Image 1 (spheres, rainbow, N blue to C red):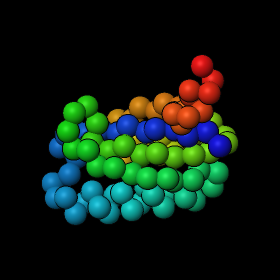
Image 2 (image 1 turned 135 degrees about the horizontal axis):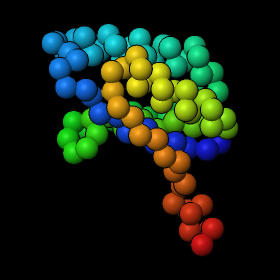
Image 3 (image 1 turned 60 degrees about the vertical axis):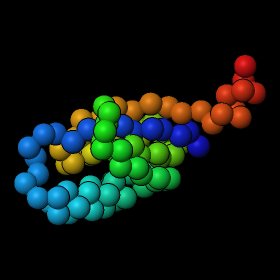
Image 4 (image 1 turned 90 degrees about the vertical axis):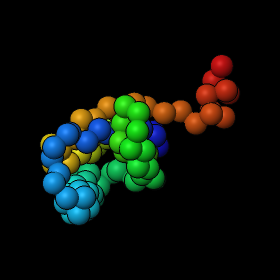
Length: 96
């Protein structure tokens, strides 16, 4: 499976109350599970600093599924997203 890193940034002013974000995150997660069955969620991190607010690590064999997950985060999560392919360090070193 290919690993993808999704970097997301909250759009300013989209939430008046942090509880709204919790509800939205649950909704987006449910949509991804339903609409992207080939995506395996490995981990999510809140960074709340720097250029992104959330880092998600996913795996899939289908790049279209990764792209769809990113678009669901973007469109339903009110976030800007950036996606990149990640290679495990040992695999990267073997390839050199």
